[in-house]
Amino acid sequence: MKIFSAAQIREADAYTIAHEPISSADLMERAASKCVAWLEDHYPPLQPVYIFCGKGNNGGDGLVIARLLLEHGYAVKTYIIQHSPQASADQQLKLQALQAVNSPTAIYNIGDVSDFPVLPPQAIIIDAIFGTGMSRPIEGWVAGIVHHINDQRQQHTIIAIDMPSGLMADESCLHTPVIQAHYTLSFECYKLAFLLPENAPFTGDVHILPIGLHPGYITQTSTRYHLSNQEIMRTIYQPRDAFANKGTYGHALIIAGSYGKMGAAILSTKACLHAGVGLLTCHVPQCGYQIMQISEPCAMCITDEGAHYSTHFHSGISDANYKAIGIGPGLDKQAGTAKSLELLLDQWRHPMVIDADALNLLSVYPSLLNKVPSGSILTPHPKEFERLFGPTANDIARLELLSQKAVEKQLYILLKGRYTAMACPDGAIYFNNTGNPGMATGGSGDVLTGILTGLLAQGYTSKAALLLGVWLHGYAGDLAAAHLSQEAMTAADIITWLGKAFQEGI
Image (tube, rainbow, N blue to C red; front, side, top):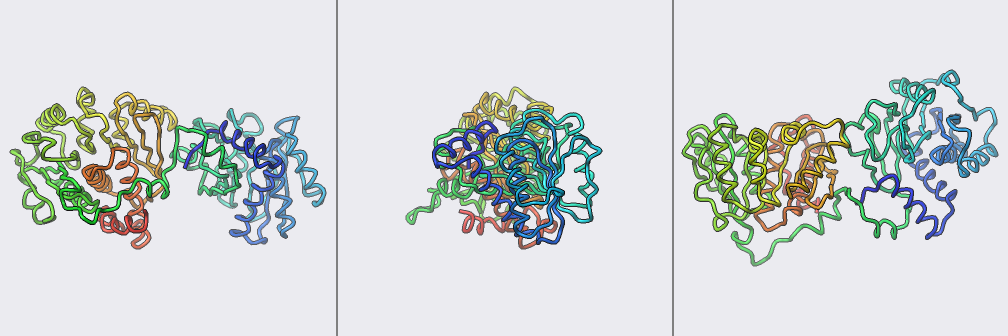
């Protein structure tokens, strides 16, 4: 699914108006009717509804919602924020339509903070002040209105239409006035702002409502940002060959584990096997040999010269032996481990998966990053990313840095999170929408490393392995949470449900 900028969304509206064809006023009616259908599904006409409208087209949406709710038996009061002397043509048209069906005493103008109403208990507040067209932070007394609405959050439900007012689709809005909605009802496609952690307090639960924007525009318009979905996964997935053998699906090497951290190695190993790899060898320090052999008999195991951590995993590795390498879970950050990593990078020139302590070694020894083979997959969480590439002022700046480094180094770099961002060497960024907070538990990243390594060994391209692996990892986590709860699930449960994720997710 494509993620469009604010400018592209306006172009999509204009294209639909011209090519459907449909008037802008009727398109507004269509969008508002979708919102009203959602509201009717969630709230019976018992709670009072207070709608705050701006002077632009987002305000027009709010005015249509007010009219339709009135027609459906809701008690509605409408407040027009006089932030501008001019109103859009469609806003004026929809105001006239509302006035025709509503009592004049139920439509109010707000020209100052002092005009803000006292709300009855358990009211529904609908924010239709500013939409996707926001281009600068809210200032002055209108910012005071935003603060007043936010002050109602504990007692009332706040629902934003299109975008929470003050939130910009493509720019950071940290430390600026923004409506803190419980729900956001937006249209047709995700906005970039919805996928960034810093905006979670503003957007609440986001619901994307289809309004029939013209498919011609969506198809022919390129964008840098994409949201992974099941449709994409089905084009990536490669069904098993009826005449295949274990050699068909590759031989992977997992380099992981150290004294006290063998659990990470075991999780990666099990995940790699459950991802479908044909053969798997695990390289562990001597202390991990019996643990690995007992825990996972389906994997072969070789031991390092080091007793408690590995220092010679580079020895004897070639592309004749292995199709893919995953390295890092529980590896430790010893100087000898760093030297062996350098020697491995000097001789292995194929894409590999680099995670956890291997990433931390790259941040301690930055020159090693230049030796990482192009097409490799790096899997940092936010702190690991910061150690690798430095801090950023906000999530938008971090996305830019993520993309810049992926292009500069010709690597695939994912940034773990609720919507894991995956940057590609061509500058594109994909967001993953599977997964849940129950996966914020020790070992979840080790499982992902195993899945990615297993897919890479089977012959998936780095991009395909990344998109499919992250999707399956999250989908398996969703299945585990549905059966066990987010609180009770562990990283091992992600592996348990991985088979079902293959069956149902793709």
